[in-house]
Image 1 (cartoon, rainbow over the protein chains, first blue to last red):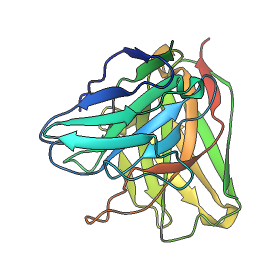
Image 2: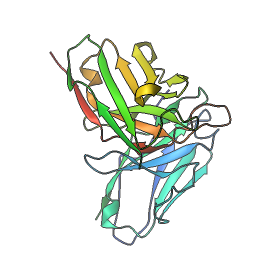
Image 3: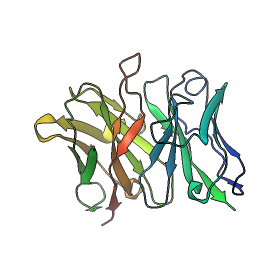
Length: 110
Length: 126
């Protein structure tokens, strides 16, 4: 199984919105709504931010939202804050009942 | 509050077997509601799912690692374990254990990891 494709880096200024894309295939992102997103700060474990494409776990800010179109899922962060600077990973269930992660995107808040 | 803690050797020699244990506290690994997973991250690189197991021992593995991976559960100790055989330098990584939120329609894991251990660095070197 091949990793999902994410941009290596994105950036934005405080208060702005950014979107991170996650492109898979018809065997994973395009076929199932089992897409999730994780935030990881340096030296820390990942944190679940979005599941089922667009649902937020309790305690996650509503500035984080998810969506999907075809084989591409997206994470949008609105009202960027300095604390949002981190690495973000998408993941998807696959037709083999396994999990595949994206390569990760480094978000820089300018 | 659920907590997970990885334990095991931080240094493993090439060709040997890496063995890690995840101890769960604040909750029961015997719960039928969850799967439990292993994820790793090589230094400076991205996340890689290794495999997942539930209370009854039902397992799912990353196809790229499947021939070398054994995941087991010991409910009496509230632990689950990972063994990775024939390791090379490419297996050097931070290894995380995590709780998976549950099952999908196919009784396979959801792969939504909501609680994580702090991670443990395993270095493969002679």
